[in-house]
Image 1 (cartoon, rainbow, N blue to C red):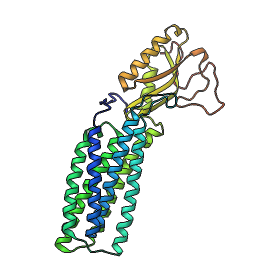
Image 2 (cartoon, rainbow, N blue to C red; image 1 turned 180 degrees about the vertical axis):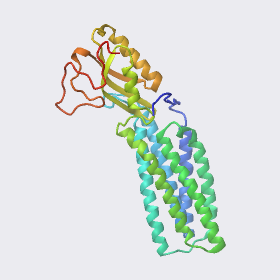
Image 3 (tube, one colour; image 1 turned 90 degrees about the vertical axis):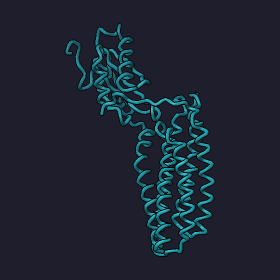
Image 4 (tube, one colour; image 1 turned 45 degrees about the vertical axis):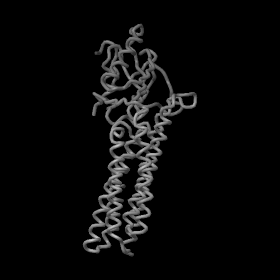
Length: 326
C-alpha cells in the first residue's frame, strides 16, 4: 500500500490534560467502590471489573506522565527528543492488559470448580455505577485517542472496562432471576477474552514503532520508485524508513547523482525532499549524495551492510540506470 495522502494529526500538546486528570480521579474512586462491593457481594466478576478499572486509572496516570515527558525538547542526551515516551507508555499499558486478562481467565476457571454465592442486587447496582463512570471516562479521552497511540491504549482500557460492566450487570441479573452462580465466572471469562483480544491486536503497532519498522501506511518500494523517478538521480540505496513517533515518519538514504549532474545536486536533493513530503507526508528526510563515479559498491537497496563491509566504487544497485538510459 502506497503512502499517498499520509495523514498527520497536529493537536495542541497541552490540550486534554484536565480531561485525563478527571478521568484518573473518577476511575480511582470507582475502583475502591467496586472492590468493597465485590467483597461484600462475593462476586468475582465485580472484583475482576474493579481490577480492570484500577488498571484503567494506572494506564491513564502512565499516559498523562508520558504526555508530559514527550513535550520536552531534544537535548544532548535525547537528540530525537522525548516523543517516544508515549509509545513506551502504550507498550506498558497493553502489556498490563495482557497480564490482567490472563489472570482473570485463570481465576474464572478456578471459580468453575468452586462456585461461590453472589449478591445479585449489589452486583447490579455497583456495575451500573461503574458503567456510567466508564462512559464518562471514554467521553473524556475519545477525541485524544484518535491522534495518540498512548491515549488510545488508555482509552481501550476503558472501553474494555465498560463492556466488562455490561457483562457484570447481565450476570447479576441472571443470578437474581435464576440463581445461576456459574454466570459469574462465565462473565469473567468473557471480560478476560475481550481484554486479551484487544491488547494483542493493538500491541503489534506499538512494537513496530519501537523496532523502527516502516510506517504501515507507507510502502518502502513506492518511496524508492518516487526517488528513482526524479531527474538527476541514477540510483538509491541504504534506504531507512521509520516512525520517529506515531504520526511522524522519517527517511534517510544515499542518492546517486548522474555523472555530469553534480552541479545540480542541491536542487535534486530539495526536489527529493519536497516529493516525499507531498506524496507520503514524510517531513524528516536526510540524504547522503554520491556522484555516480564514486557511488557505494554493491550497497543494499534497503538497510546497511554488516560491520566491515563498507566499500566504494563505480557500481549501482540492480535497478540503477546508467546516464542516458532513461
